[in-house]
Length: 313
Image (cartoon, rainbow, N blue to C red; front, side, top):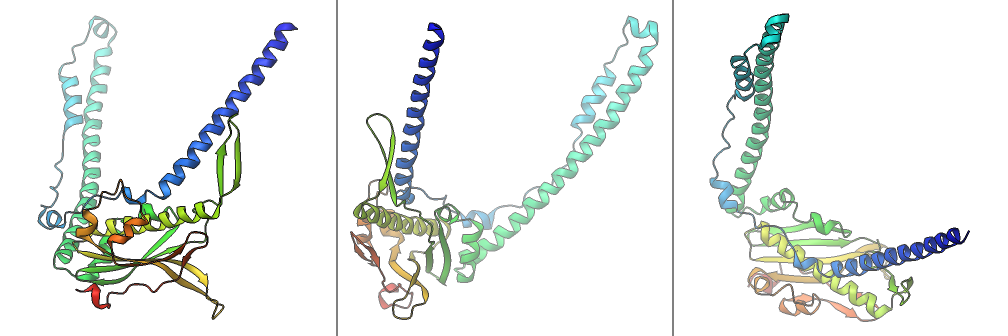
């Protein structure tokens, strides 16, 4: 009974340790998520080499191989009946089996060749698509820009944070992107704390912290979208307007309201040390519109358009 009680106590202690480990893990996940929200600008896709796509040679057509047949043929050629094969008549049976393997090897080679042809066809289609698209991109055809961004899945990762992107305007040297935030709670309304005893506690996030995170999230996303655009397109300027659907108090209708509008210049963005910037403060490097209060968040602003005089100068 004494040992039984000891084991019960050990079980309870182990359960407490497990709970502590789980709580610490959940707290780490929460902190990591908050850091991720304000760090979207630190990562982006590879730069697309449209010159390379335009000049790339077509993928070579596959040749019919004979690897499987050669292996089987070599096994047949080198087969030498042993004593028992000769004694019990197994040599003929083994020879027939090896000859069948040669036929099967030839069929396997043909099947692999057919698969290679299908793969080559897909590669050829992709080569043709990218080559044709590259020619349009290099000629500064604005109608090709949305296609290129879609082909590169430029905004795929940003979409994971409930941000819908739409190419609003394309011109030879500037693209305007409209970004709509969903009503989903991307920035959590509650914060998680880890007590000294290893227990998780939750409480409403203070308004100032919530809106500070939200502002950095929005600005970080805007930078990321501009960077992704520059990585895909050979343009020098990108306009990013960010907003959400809100109720217009004057009409009572739900409308897309812009609360951050930024005109990014490739040269200026390339000079920033994105690992060390504060996303919200970095907006000072670019012409932008943003009205923000620490306790209530964003207010509506006019979106930036490509028709404004300072955009083209």
